[in-house]
Image 1 (cartoon, one colour):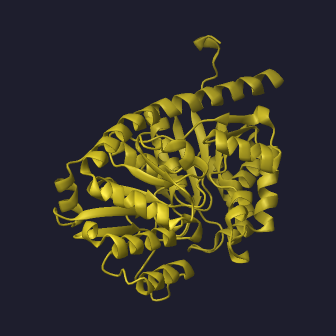
Image 2: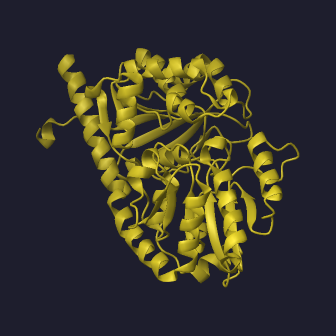
Length: 425
């Protein structure tokens, strides 16, 4: 197709209904998807596309419109239900209200969108309702899948609801294009949901190489308050069972028992959650009790959720980042850490199996295996040269995921979809 024949994309409606892209990393429902929506929208703006990110208002003190996404980007907080955090499954009760208020906002500004890009199943259901009014195509990303969550669930409370599974099946059918982060996710869409293969495009998330670039370790440690002589092992993410943090704590206990000398002046820092809450959530309480039971209170510290802007300093201050997850659709934290030049030890599951290159950018370990994880942590703690080599290689590998490259690939999908719509008309 010639450039003259390409459809001109001017404005996109981005839907992140249940969680705001500007939220601090490590909250109950803030993680890789928040980072994706924020940075992807920013890069679209850099390329001249206007982006409105619609998300449910969770605080009536926050401005309705926030211009923190750079040129051409806005986060618009839409009232739907109580303006406070609520369980994700309850958000489904307010989708009609959310949709109506998005339509009212767009009409009040006389806005016409070219395309809807929705994230997570709740947003996909809203996208369907908006398409009825706007008559434009839908591109959808799930980020996590209910059936995959169920495969690793160890109790009924950890399983995806029937409403979520039904919603995911519906979105598979209604979306015009489905974006999978990796070939592994594509296989899950096909095998677990019988998705239409012709709808799927594989495009990974990206990384901001200007924000996430190597920082001198002593400088980074000073910024985050870590003594320069200390060694730091880092976890960053949501505090929930599927993240496998308990495996990491058990690995640290094994190292302390068998090779205590390597842990002199060492600390494992866990970013995420609220460890000081009067009423701890179940997983945070369980992990703090496990830390006590394993007698590693001096080795492990919970730092709580952190603003996304300060995270590069934590990555740079760490000797390694550990991701012991039971399931990850991609693993944005791993990509950001690698871009900083920090090696990653990750479970060989989902997107992490694809993203982290064993013995090149870090190590793969089996999920739920503290013995192997302890061995790999020990190897990196004991071998500075190995850490440095893996870190250098990780930085070079991460460069292929630069956001401009990723957005160019997504724009090609957008344009192809709009051409198909024009052809049908």
